[in-house]
Length: 456
Image (cartoon, rainbow, N blue to C red; front, top):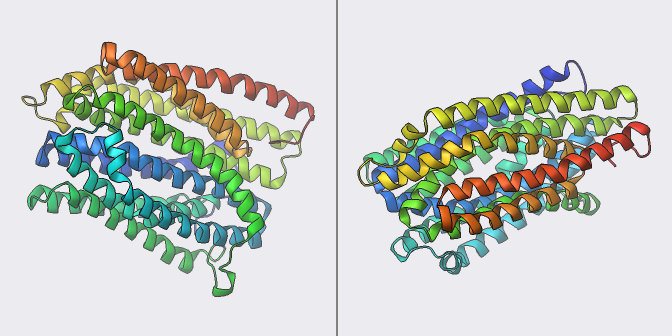
């Protein structure tokens, strides 16, 4: 297994080696999501594209909530790995899996039960209500597979192995896309088939992760006697993971409120918003992967204690290098969004019937391409604070961003359309950085003076 102790050798090399596979994995996953929306829009129709767009933030609340719990557990496992405590590493693995089984089954049942009232509350047009409801219910029922894959991937990443989750993600994405092309593109099945293929692909990635860990990663493989829930570790995990899950869920909850506002602008706006948010994902998700590399780097140093000035200096250098990687990625995505916005929109809808959606999407991307620099910076800072264990700080910053973004959307979108959604994003990120920056500088000075242990 390709474990990576990020406290050794070159800081820049370690960050690139760790972040690279994560970014590639994200790009494969996002490419599948893109293909999924393209197939829905081209082969089923504009209504299917709008239905997927409405379902997306609902599912993201669940998925990001799950990944938030996994990230919180991953920070703890990174600390145990950095400290060389293999016993605690296994106990944490067992605890988070057992808790997650009960959590994911409960979420699946409740989600499927309350899908109808939720869609009505979101003002989903009656013409696509049944289509959207069926899609969301099937995705909800796949929640346990989503949880197990995310948790097992976080465990592998905590010991520095970001390449293996990439391989499973690539396989899962290709499987998902291939099934969609065959069953929807060629055989003409509807949007419910898209939900089924998504669940099948998630189940495959979870199964492969389990088999790999038992065959290749003895540090994480659990024997029959080791499968038990440690209440003391669960308490710490929930303290880390629940805050991170709430933080992760804030964004899709905010997007859900924004989607409600966009739904009031008509089906063209809904279709355009689904398309452009796929491009948003290509910006935000890899930026979050770089932030995760920063988190693992800092957390492994915390596991060693980070007591010396040399250790702290290397942590700050790694943080600066991580921000540099964030800015490099922003440059790439900005060029793509600005230079190819119309061809991107053509992927989703036809020029004739979708002319209005194309125009709206091009306007949005023309503004957002330049604004993607703001989440690049804020994600880097968030990654640093997560690695320090300061989960409440990341939650507070995210809530600031989401609050001002939603308020801006409801103020601007009814007046200037979908471009108001982009400008509202800018407002949220500016307030977020205004909160994070001074807090970071204040604590950095205290850590350097030795007023408190690093990360406290």
